Amino acid sequence: MTRVLLAEDQGMMRGALALLLGLEDDMEVVAQVASGDEVLPAALRERPDVALLDIELPARSGLEVAGDLHERLPSCAVLILTTFGRPGYLRRAMESGAGGFLVKDGPVEELAGAIRKVLAGERVIDPALAAAALSVGPNPLTPREQEVLSAAADGSTVADIAGRLHLSGATVRNYLSAAIGKTSTRNRMEAVRAARRNGWL
Image (spheres, rainbow, N blue to C red):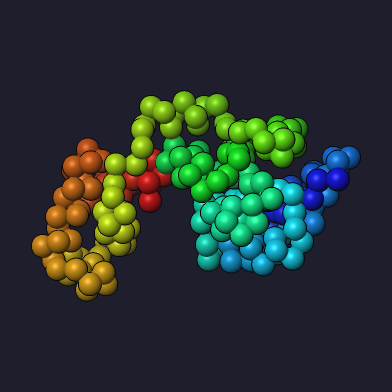
């Protein structure tokens, strides 16, 4: 019997997934959590064979948690399930040790099949997303550029960002300028939108 951990912040979606997977003869949902910081404790307690993680979780993202599981509980396979089919998310998921990446609008039979494949050591990736990830290429932003661009997302001034990140105003402007150039946009808010669309933030 395959033991499954579900991490999904929307209660109705989590309940539906648990119900549907419970109908499979060879699967049992042994833990359900609603936030990223609950995943590792639940996984260490229940020792699931596979963790089904949403990306957009409160406290810690599914991508961050996937890395934790890969390190602390390598016997647990990870399958990322998301509403957002962003190419950069796929790349980050694979780098964090996830065995699969699916978007939520697929049929439940596909999900059960994906769980079985990931457990068998296969990689399972949404085909359309794989093609998009190859066309977009790797994240061009450095970690510092990502940090500064994320800080700019709420409309903060250069001075606010500089104070928050302990940088000079000139340095913040340089990072923002580099990010705008690399995303081929005209200003920082367009750069934020482009980076988010590609899953780079």
